[in-house]
Image (cartoon, rainbow, N blue to C red; front, side, top):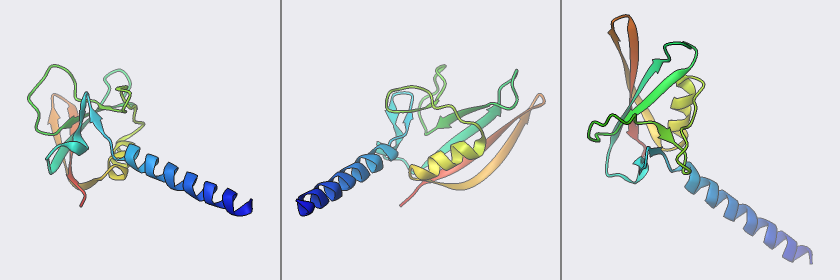
Length: 122
């Protein structure tokens, strides 16, 4: 009986590890899973919200056509993922297969947007 329990437990852990790995490798920008695209780079644009400078607005440019629709990072249920900070977003991207390359800052009318270039790992 102990052998069956051990085999079941190990199988369950392997299954859960496989599920969490597949979930971790999915980043949606609106309806597009960018990890499935044949792209090498993305750019995160980070600005502070006007009325709440401690909250960040983070958008992703993966080379898509311009759209009035913001390019938010979403979960598989298509809900916008709220990030507490730029580092939170960069850690999220790193855990999901994107590596930091460089950062630039663009200032326009007193507002600064930080742009982070990320490269697909591997």
